[in-house]
Length: 208
Image (cartoon, rainbow, N blue to C red; front, side, top):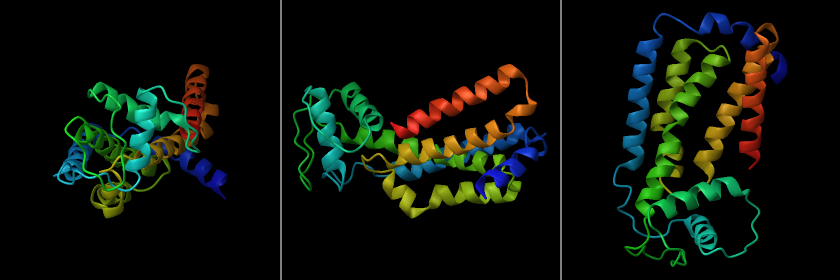
């Protein structure tokens, strides 16, 4: 049922994009996104202990920085992005990330958690445009975006060092790209090619 549903939605896409209130829409969406970031970063450094799966992904970052081989079931892209933020923040890879242990001053856990919060905040606009791309009414898209801002589970998962915010964002963008590819046959060849290229990139990102 998914394919006919997306096809029907993309046939209505011209009625959804663009519209005369696009600038105001983007402004309000920016306010919601900034609000989501503020909520997710509020007192984000108060708990200075290694929380839940931070013990795994922090250790993976240490292994990458120290160039140590390890075996893990998770794809590498998300872990490499976490490692990049650690490295850019000056982390040397010397902490063992034991569960429940307090972070020393040499570990920039707040910066990495803020990166996770930023990624989680981007779920707000991606959810809004996902709803609009699938043909949902404007009001429903706003409700969905607001729910993402205040959802407790999404807030919690965006405040710690895990892969989930990146995976959720990549999947929402993938569905948007897929729905637009279904309507690409009526567009210009260059536009059709670009949509397929973006779809391929997002499929690769989700798989990595």
